[in-house]
Structures are given as structure tokens and as C-alpha cells.
Amino acid sequence: MRAALWLAVLLSTPVLMPSAFGQPVTPPAAASRAWAQDPSTGCRFMVPKSLTAGPTFWIGTCKDGLATGLGMLRRRDGAAPGPAFYGDMQAGVPKIGAIDFDGGYQVGPFRDGDIGQGEIEPNDRIAGFTVASKAALAVSASYKAQNNAASARHYEGVAKTLALQADF
Image (cartoon, rainbow, N blue to C red; front, side, top):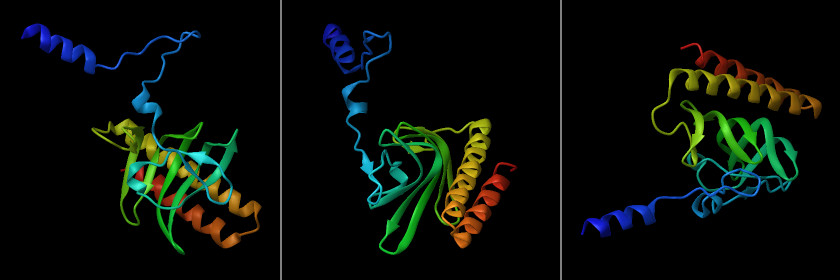
């Protein structure tokens, strides 16, 4: 009985095998996450679970077809804007930031497919809001470059609101 239990534990534990370059190989379960694509630009990214299903747009840099750097993922519900993730993306994967639920925030690093999952350390909370504020400023600059002054001002205000959250 004991041997069967140990065998079950060993078989259910993911094993990271080193690749030829010394980096761990990603287990198949993590590699199989669905990628989303901005309907207008084709830029690809992983959407945090909290943004839920629906057309999602990326405003930020797209490098090699993947969302990269500071920016915003915004889900749209028809003509109405849905929740938004402001933060840092690395090769299409969120790193850290905040999700704005129109009056409430979920903040922190990206874990388990979402932002701010589990116990959030105070420094991670502060870092999440700080990065989110910088991301909103990057979105504002993008709109300013497109001569869209109203949207640029709106996202400047979002950046200020996010920065204030880091002070609490």
C-alpha cells in the first residue's frame, strides 16, 4: 500500500527537465494555456482570468507578435469598455500590475493564470500599483501620439489614481 502511495505521488509531481541550454522545460500543462489575440493588431498575449472571456485589446508595444512592456489589456463588451489590466507584459505574459474593475482593484504579480492570486506581500502590492500607474502613463502617451487628447487626459487621470493606491 505504501509503495502504491509513493508511486502515485511521484507520478503526479511535475518534473522539470533541463533543456540543452540549461533552462527548465515547461511542463505541458503550463504550455497549453490559451493565447488571445488583439482583433485589430493581431498582437498575442495571455489574458488574466479575471478579465473573463471576450474580445481583448492590447495598447502597448508588440514585439515579435507578442505584447511586451508597459501597456493595457482592455476587454470590450460590445461598445462598452470592460475591465482593464494595466501592467508589464513579457513576451505576451503578464508579469505584474493591476486589474481595474471600475471601482475596485486586483493587484500583484501574475500567478496561477491571474493577477494578485494568493497572499500578496505589501511590497508586491505597492510594486503592482506603481507598475500599473506607469503602464497607464504609457497608454496616455500612445493616445497623445495619435492626437487623441481626450483619451490621453483620461489615462493620465487613471495613472494618478493608480499611483495614489500605492500610498495606502
